[in-house]
Length: 499
Image (cartoon, rainbow, N blue to C red):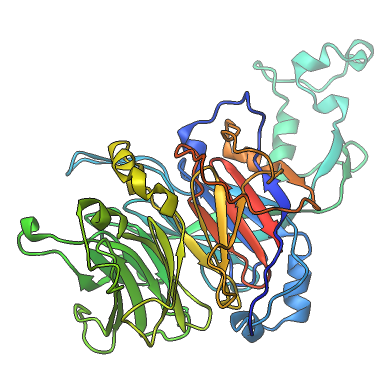
């Protein structure tokens, strides 16, 4: 199947505010993740909060049309893009302080990963720099009373003095000195009231969702966690920091197994660090991790308990011929993703997006240039630390299309096999054709509940890279598993685009 060029349209936006609103650093979105069915999308921010959105008809579509096996082996692309609405919000992490190391631990959400849903409940893993948590999100129906009328004799004596009945009836029920009616307190405790004396009107049942922390996985990483990934067995997951990768069982919080250890005996000999790690989507024994030197290692956990010897190492031989101080920095891989079938790996470094075939480790299948126009400005980018910015990447459900972010809130989308390496460039805004502007600011993540929906705005290839703004950058994004729909975060705002 050869992919065709697609036109990307604006679909929805959550959290956009007026330009006059000021944004706090805690409100910046730091993670975006779809669940396996695509019916839910989770958004985390630097303030440790998680907001979950759901499709307006997602429950019925998932339960009535597709079996669990069909959802797990999703190999189709729907032409109808879903629409999302706010579901729930909760605080996942709080700021902490490590007294042993005199180190502050920020509440920033680094990564989110959905787990297998059970009994209609949703499970999601979230992590900051040190602690991973497993959350259960469950729906429940709540009765809501429109209004409730209490009889006069059950009012407190102070309020009863203002009632007309208190002036007419001298045989009122005596009250205690502090003004509380004893019979009222007894009835409240026993939940018993005469039906003719208590009148209430119950509204319809209302669907609400609440989150509960089920597991806390802590004290296993000396360095900041940069990745978490669920295994296809549904029982285990990995967490990776700069030098180690640990294997966890979802049911065990006090024990993990170190499966990759890159820490040298002498830290002065350190030459590279781990930047990203992910399990193979279908083979539970395989995982891949990338490094700051531009390498991708594919390891098999069946070979040994400590997977220091990789099964395959993917490296671009042509890219590593001529190296300098700055080229070594930009060669660092910030993110990797497997395709749904596990045949390909997509990787993102500072300059390029690369597609790898797991059967060919000598060179990438395709290279898509993202920041080639910034190559003459690498020294300037190094001086203002922009050269260390980390951009994520994502792949479509059919494995034929790829997306990543760039500066000036630009979203770059590419297709494999089309013959054009230019791809499509759109700006993350309600009006993708406008000139890049500094992103609007807001005061709270709860403003994501303010949804805005509009369709019909065709996106054109902006293509003009003469102007770029490193202060506004699109770093976090995710691709819907069953539709040509991309969710991306520009500052504090979540945008959806469909094709």
